[in-house]
Length: 130
Image (cartoon, rainbow, N blue to C red):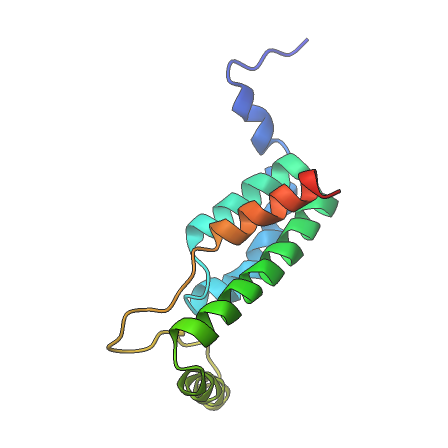
């Protein structure tokens, strides 16, 4: 019988197998400052606990919940025409420069959401909804 002095050591036993997947999936979003390192760490730890199938459900559900939250904020708190214009200019700039510049509005308060809230919602849907 192997004894581990800390129970959380088990969290990291399957972490190396999911780390390349999470890094490959979220690194481009991190480079564009569209997702934070804390969100990536939360998803990586959840992936090591939940396993590949459940974490994939949580990632997809979290992005869908985040999209709903973002659309709500876009239409009720921002000028949505200006944001769409900025988004298409951003895509054009990314295509011309062949890089992924940070997606931030200069000179304004960043319009961002805390992605851990949709992540929490996805975990709750996983365990409470089925």
